[in-house]
Length: 141
Image (tube, rainbow, N blue to C red; front, top):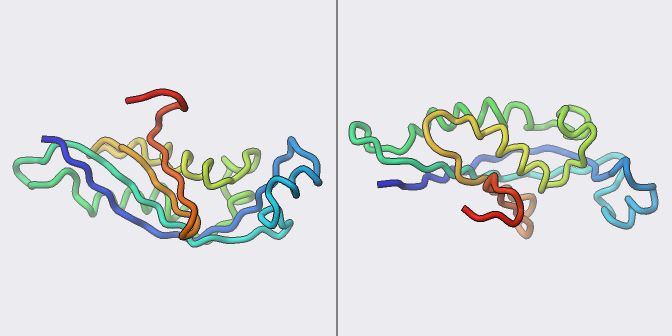
């Protein structure tokens, strides 16, 4: 029997949406107030879903303490209260949109050894969220 476990975590980070491939006016047009030279911040909520069989001895898919420690090490400690554009190497050349941040978080969590990573859902605001399953666009599982 395969089940899915989802767990939510919170972190705060700031970023500026600005592409070096675009001119100043194009950046302002596309990103609007998110192109502010001083950046802006969000209180992100990330939901991590893993799946696997229920271990007959423990009755669990994965130990929550193990998942919490892994997410803390791979996501919360590196990202919390950081300016993504400058403090996260992956975003020095890539625009730190929430879409790209969601993919980056998924890639960092892909190595969780105790269960299969199914998806990462990242809430930027109460109105905006993004979900990534690791699948390229246009493919199906």
